[in-house]
Length: 461
Image (cartoon, rainbow, N blue to C red; front, top):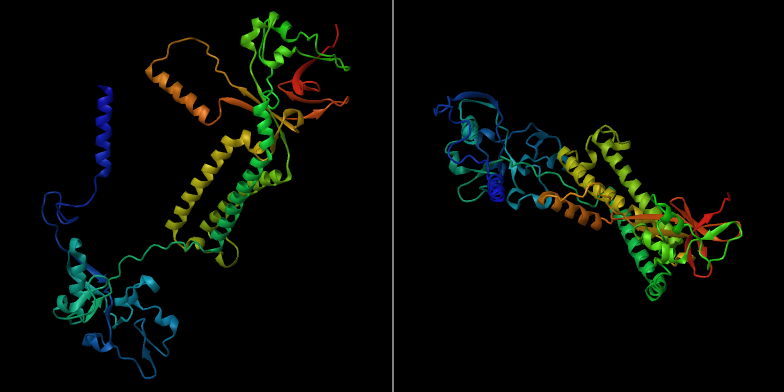
């Protein structure tokens, strides 16, 4: 029942989100709360649009330009001594468009004289464009303008239409050409990183083929199994884990190896009582490579460059960039606050994904830029230990808790958070034996088995 109600509620929300806010049954601001048509109001100092024609002789008589001697009427709608390219580019009949964005019908349009601002006695807010055209046409003594005057972008010159109102639609929002220097720098740096990672991955795959084949052919050489040395143990288990093997030679320094049964994961005798305490732990060896080290530093440098890139855009937001952009806000975004904010959102999204990815891959990232080898040959040893949940009370979960637990386990497994990854550097004793330290336990390389085993120091009584 509850599930059905939730489904209906979801459908209702979907329908509401799909609804529009268009005025279908009445004009906005035309009627008051009681349904009466709003009283007309006066509007003063209304700006009239330019009248554009193909030839100045087609302008209405009252709008035909007349310039003083020595001056010419230019495309910006004023008289000048010389019509320079800069002046001609300010043609109001082009509606701030140029190139491919300028309609072909508007390329040859030139403006007539500007119509003075007008006062409209009865201004209809729901039909403002027609009110303005009628008032401006009356000011310019244009009769029957609905037949001889078109509207820019809707009805062009031709047949009976001799001129058009330059009622420019909203200018297109500025956008990047994506050939700007800063975007080329972004492509170059990130593309170089992607290419480097690809080349390293190919090289790493070929270089590790022999090691992976040896690992498959001889299990335990590259994946040793260690007895768990963590947690509290009872007296019997402690004595069995710390009991030296009779087959293991005693080290001169007083170290002695644990039983090979614990190292190999098999149990016998007293160790059967500590099965629950013995945990299979995988070992992998890694060694540094100059190309991998460069790759790891490359990732760190690119991440820092992204942070610096954010700093550049933040400075541009406040107009604090040095040089020619100083004092100009949003200069990198063509002085468009909307475009700058949109850029911020996209960049924050990319940086967030990058940060989360690095956080998830942090236990594996450095070893990815090393070459896999046998634990006995590696400069580093990676210890992979499964993480086990400790349940304080054995209670049967309800339906919701059960599914939450299932999803949590799946998410931990997908993010590879169900295991603990620890990379330990391999060191050398004064006697020349290789070892690494993991959770306060020293694991020493056995020269005979070529495996690491935990050792203990006999401090005497």
